[in-house]
Image 1 (cartoon, rainbow, N blue to C red):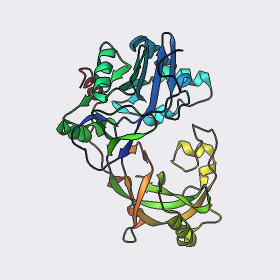
Image 2: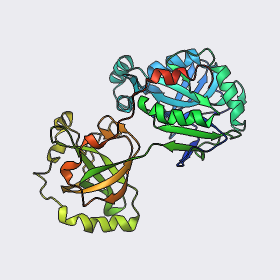
Image 3: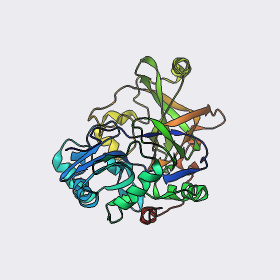
Image 4: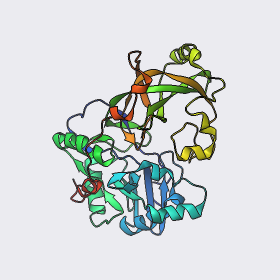
Length: 358
């Protein structure tokens, strides 16, 4: 492979802001695996956000990218899997598997797509110092004849349309809007773009915690919600405490410690088969293949209000943010019924919006 921008390349990143800023290019925020694709003739390399290769996990995309991208190019985009008209992150993570036979089986059963939104090199020309507006024009021309599963991400200069996207596209599994300064040069691993994400709040049961990597202080709180059967399901974690607050939480939560934890709602977490019927902490990681054993059980008696952006099935897609304790709420009142459901929106309509170049 001999390109003007060689792998590995870490993608340019975005910082969080609360409102959509004016005077920029706007795109939907995709919920998948960020990927930098290098193509030089028959050679295709798919790099992850960390620079490590993803190529072996998406064999169907290697073929599709070779058929749809220019012969020599470097493209920034997102790998996604669509299921029932929505993005499905869980099915995407299933691909990170050591067995090649399983990867290829999943590639046939739940094939991935690639959504392109930036161009880093074309032919013999590096575009890292080229303004965004020019890179976007070149990307639209390069993908003018692209066919699924390779797509051009929709983009607009209209902030009002971006606000409509922010509201509508969530129903298709997207999680916000990205705003990019028009004259932005491409700077790998630097937060020069802006992301505007949805935020909601929920009252949840705090039923355990994990230690912080630095020592015996709270790293994250384990959160639960009751389902229709009255079973407490593990829905995610909240973190982002100061180091002082992490130490305080150990003392604050000590009266709730359950040792042994035989009567805890998640007592069966160490039994791998139990994860098939319930959401429990400590599941086998698809990334490392190891169990996380480092959590302590708490009596499920305290309620916290947390902020979250959106749900992935029955869990919080990202780490929730602690807002406050809710002594006025009972654990039994912390059910899925309180969660706001976005209005459904077919992902095919989102992808078709990019066909005309935004």
